[in-house]
Image: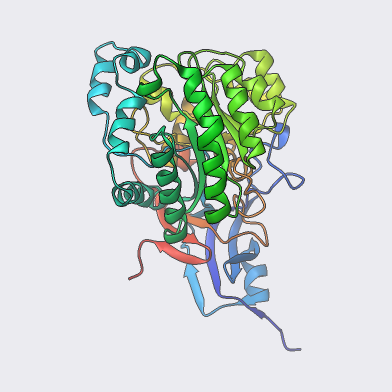
Length: 429
C-alpha cells in the first residue's frame, strides 16, 4: 500500500518542546485555562502559504507531510512569535538625563512639571522629519524582532498637534508595510497636555474632539483598512475621566476602537470607564482597586500589564496580577517601550519581570505575551498561537524548555524567528 503525503512549503522538525498555546473557546485564556501552553514533546510544525497547516508529534507530522524546506530545530523549544500589546516605539531624542534625576530623588511628576517628561519628547519629535521618525522606529523594531516579537502595537502621542500626530500614523503604517513585524497603530493624541495648552487643558480636548480626531478618521479612510485605536492617559495631572470620556465618545463616532492608560499613579476611575465603553484594553494598573480588578474579570477588556515600567521607574510593581487572575480577567503583557521610563524593546525581559514582580508562572507569562496579547490587539484569530489556519509566526529558542524564557534574563535566547513562514532572523542574505 502506497503512503500518500501532502506537500507543504516548510516543516520545522525535531522540536524538543512545542508550545501551541491554544485559544480558549475561540478567545483568550482566562481563569483556570490561563497558562495552558498545549505542550507537545518531540514535535514538528507544517506550514503552507505562510499559515500553520498542522502542529503535532514528529512522527505524525512527518507521516502526513513533506517539504523541500525543512528546518531542524535540534531539540530546541518552539513557541508562537511574541506579541507586544503596548509600545510607544516611535519618537525622537532621549531622556537619559531624567533617568539620572530620578536616581537623585526626583519623581516622574516633578520632572514633568519642570518641562521634562512626555513634553520634552514632544518638542524633539515635532522637530524631526518623517524620515527620521521612521528610521528611529525601524531600528527599535529590528531589536524587537531579533528578540522574538512578531506583532507589536505602536502608539503616536509625541506630537500632540495634528501635523505631527498624522505624520506619526503615516510612519507607523509605513513600518507595517515594509517591516516583517506586524505593527498595530494606536492614536494617542491624548498622551499629555501640550505646553501651548498648559493653562487651558479643556481647549486642547476641544481641539482633539473637533479637529484632530476627524483628521485621524480621514487618514484611516485613505491609508488603513484594519482596526485603528484611540488611547488616552487618564491620570492625575493629565486627562480627567470626564475629558477622557469626551475624547472616547468622539473616537467611537470616528470609527476607532479604544484603549486606555489608567491607574499608573492614581486611580481616577479609568478602569470603570474603559469597561463601560468596551475598550479593547486598559493598561498599567499599578494602583487598580480590588473592585476594579473584579470588574475587569467580568468584562472582555484586557488588562495589559507592563512590568518594565515600574522597573524603569525604580518603584514597586503593585499591579494586582493575582487578583486579576482569580477574577477571570484577560491578562496580557507589553513592553511599554518608550524613551522616558522603559526603553526596552525586548519582550523576553517582560516575561522575566512578570514572573518576578507580578508572580505570574512562566506558563502564564508566556500565554499573556502571545495568545492574550493577540486578542488584546484584536488579532487573536491570526496570531498568538500555533493552531492550524493561523499565521506561521514562530520562534525557535536556544533553550530546551519554556521555563527558561523567564528563568533567564540579560541575553537574547531567540535562535530563529519565522514570520509568515519565512525566516526573518537571523538574516538569510
